[in-house]
Image (cartoon, rainbow, N blue to C red):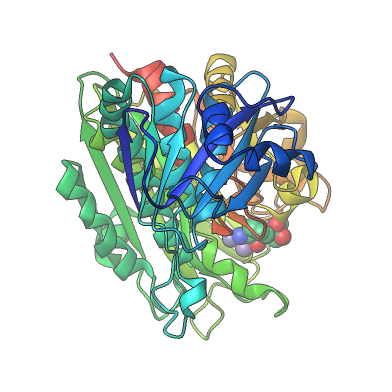
Length: 485
Ligand code: BES
Ligand code: MN
Ligand code: ZN
């Protein structure tokens, strides 16, 4: 769908969309449209519960006196800020998407958030239809263009093209990977797909199985060894500035059966999105490079498939990580931390980073704690943690901080190795983070457990059902606010 910006002029076809503030009073263009339709809009409001509450909608189809298919009234509530502008844009898109209208003109009351309304609409228009060969016409979107009509449309257009459109591309890039099934997206094909980042100026380095053996990334390779699909590690580098980089690390388990510690079959199909952390990193790299950010950013993702087989890792196996520390693998389903352990130690040694942020669909315990509203954060650095919380609030990818503490270390004691890969049932998300902490030393680091936020069964205004792309905007915002010179 095309987003455009124009001066506020009544359309002669398609949908006319008007924002109405809390209270439901028709003013400005809404009053004019009401007049032109001999009061059809005010009558519709009087006959409904619509009162301008934020994101509420009221559709008036084919009103007399105007040459439009429909007038859509959308509530702008009270205190219309940039975040609400995105949500209203998304709400408008969704209300019009399959309405029959092919175009819409949204009259936007505030010059400064017009670009945000466009961004929200574009984010809401994401679809993953490539495997649907039998879509009915009425299931297909009709809306091909949404115009945001605003007094300062030139500035909004500029801002949207520079930032908004880059974010939309980046989020879609991530959502596409997350949506793909495990038979299509596996380490080799995923690494190939990431090469696309070269088109925006990111250097992409792919390590195959032999290279990973050479590097001695044994905890990562241990997870991959049961699969017919070889592991890959992909390093993505955007050098928009000098100095130590910020490093983004992503868990990319393209399918997580649990391995020999196999998961129950019910719901296992969800484990195709166990690579959501890596997709967030890839999307963030795209956004950052897309707007040519003046920052030095490295992304690294560990791509493996966790399968049970005759060659699979056994419970009780002891592996020596890249860092030299040994791990007793009690449960092969706690595989994400084994992948991240090697990546974290490797990037810290190689890049001497300013800070490291990892994202992973790491634990079911995190979902139990926070459901799908917040992702969990663990950090050894208060400043980094505060910056992440602020970035998350700004883009509505919210974070809630959990503790790290040495007192949890005893839960990871092994009889035979330096540590085991799981603790007891209690505090499962914390012991996972405490495990990771052993591989980062003193570098400022944050771990984001996105198990509850990478996928959604319920659409939100700017996030359709399915792959959310959670983390792309968060990381992009963090880099923009903190690391860009
Ligand atoms: N990928 C899962 C975590 C997960 C669960 C993500 C549900 C999204 C939704 C992870 O690899 C896993 O299996 N974790 C185990 C750890 C346990 C064996 C200590 C879990 O959370 O059950
Ligand atoms: Mn698992
Ligand atoms: Zn997993």
